[in-house]
Image 1 (cartoon, rainbow, N blue to C red):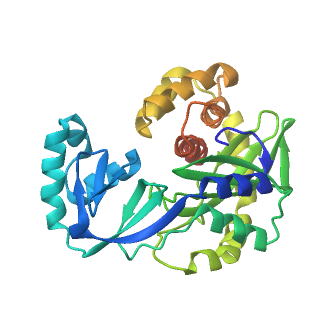
Image 2 (cartoon, helix red, strand yellow):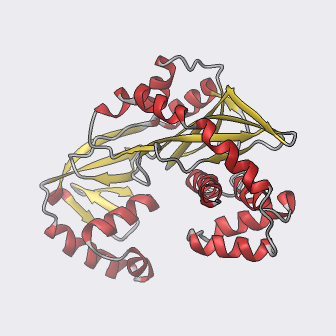
Length: 310
């Protein structure tokens, strides 16, 4: 469900439920952990594959640069990891598993918020299974955006619908966040706006989900503010759009696949205004080869660029 244009909350709920079927958490005594290499660790002698996101977070936690470790042969990886795990200050760490795979490692103070909980909370707030949503979802990241017809507007015949965007990572790629969202109906490009009231929460408190209604109200209040920004983008000429795209790619630190998505999107949105530039990034978010996190990032880059105009 990474690149569907519009689906329903019920279908997202079913997919999240399916993806989490074999997931569980366990506090592990640090002395019981050893490493064969960067891709396999052992817990009390039992081997477990380490997923890439977990491998990167383990490397960072132990203070060994991930790019360096990845270039090392397996025996040097093991030597480094087995040395530095003995320096870990916590007696236990929280391991998140999917079957036998390690998908994330955190301190025991970390309180994960799962995508299933986010969907359940939205359901309790009246967003039923038939609610139309735009969703980018994979095992590492979920971006779930809900357009609201009450916040629709037209600019020069182009129709937009505002709404809310919820993003979450069960493996620590990002905090749970709520932001303004805009769907351009002609192409289903979704833009996640830069907003002063966008809210994000570290996963260290059970209050996160209980605060949803208040934060939703605050974010919803800002939905009308972007209309003038869209209009301004349509009226802002760009002399060299492709050079402008290259500049923004560097400014926002896009990775290789994200840059490739922008190249794919440009012919679909080609134009000589900032509106075309903004829509290139939101169109790029729909490219099928992207991770869910990259799709979210590109939607947010579009929003950040829109917010920069004055």
